[in-house]
Length: 258
Image (cartoon, rainbow, N blue to C red; front, side, top):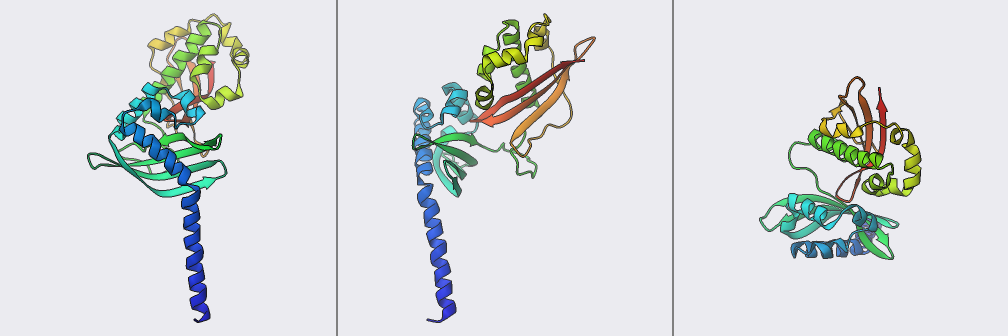
């Protein structure tokens, strides 16, 4: 056997071992995904939630999960295949597609974290069908969905301002933001608005006007800014969102009347 043939065989063996290692170390994530989809196929949403990470479960109840699965035709699950597997320490990712009972193919990406030695699903991302930009970053939601996010966040904020306690508002924001600030810290941060005595509830009857095109930055943060057409001064806002679980959750809020 000549030298170059030996080298060639050696390279093939190394590649084969590398592929085998990837499949071995990511098998736990695949098992979790399989168990999740088995529960989904059986319409057992409560069981499916058992395979979610704590942060995911904290931000997504059974109804929200069922709605997401139904909208994306994932409830019609038949089988999954994974074209790309990545793992780094206690985090991992599966990228591939699922086939529905009707024969459709749905691209899907699942991110995982290890909790108490077990792989749990941290987020599920399904690209929106239809025309998309070529940007590899997570796509910003449609403008109508951005408006809905802004309005819901503002409604939750107003509930807490009127009650002079940011507890309710904090319970609706991203888990990441909740970990960064306590209710007391948010009370202090928004103290001026709480004590202003303004009738913030009038914003619930107005449509926010978005300023320019909203995009998702390299850190996965969606920034939506604009104003409410109040008189004589407008209520300007900047809201930041991050994708947690199956939806966008508020990560930051700035309000200014001018």
